[in-house]
Image (cartoon, rainbow, N blue to C red; front, side):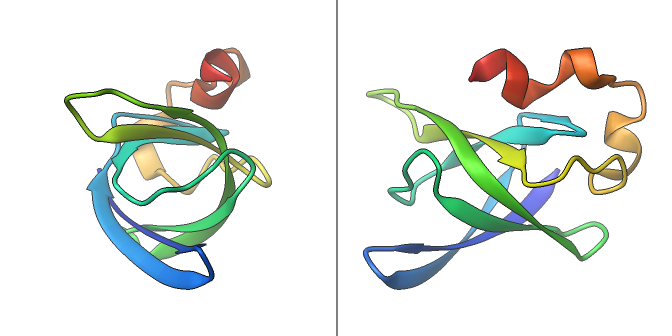
Length: 100
């Protein structure tokens, strides 16, 4: 799913277009090139619905050959943000809970 990420790095605002790898009602996992850090707050925009939601970086997974992956968790769980993509997920399948 296409998303737009908004945040700040070194007091400079950034936005980045990326695609999700996994999503749940608690957050998601996606590649990111910005140098974000754990606990940093971000705003995600679901480009299919134009909905915005605040989240925090739960974990950064760095890979030498590919982009870093950001595992984020919503500040408040949202069954609606990802639309039908999370209709089959329950709380026990939360991406953020499994990764952090």
